[in-house]
Length: 213
Image 1 (cartoon, helix red, strand yellow):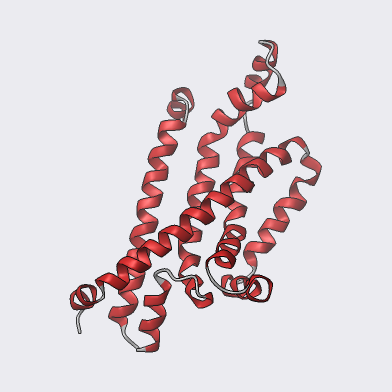
Image 2 (cartoon, rainbow, N blue to C red; image 1 turned 120 degrees about the vertical axis):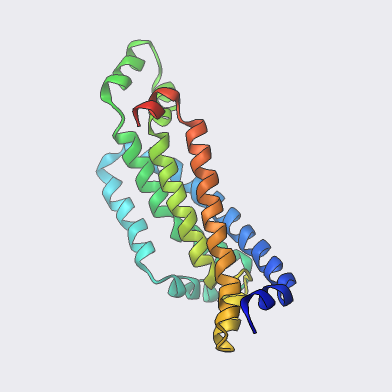
């Protein structure tokens, strides 16, 4: 059976897997951002502990993704929620590290200019540091997104669904076409997300920083 026929016959299953994969990615990325960005910002204010915290997130990412998902089973059972928790943990490192690196790397002259204009520390953060570091932060988000999409294929092993169902079914049946029917939409999803986030990065980055970059 050729690939086209597989896609034609399995279209409802592929569509369902794609939707589940999209949900897993969106929810996990959302939590990774709302945890990772504030954590990265906090670390710029407490730099002595920054390396230790970033090291912890790095250790979490070095755990094999299959093992990390497996750890969730005795803690939270199987299904969507434990998969999201594992994927969020897996996607934290690039966001935390890039947020910290981006803000720390902001030109000190720009910060001093903001302080000289009478800005509070909060205003300097939101009006100077974050806008100037935004391209670096977004690069971390893009990296995290691709990681989450890739690891989400394994989430089907703990009952979370997604395109991994198709891939593992293909492995069990020794069908390369069935494996590709699950792997190709996942790859397309990663490319689409990366493109959209790149466009968003360009839109939200101040023109001066954009031109300099």
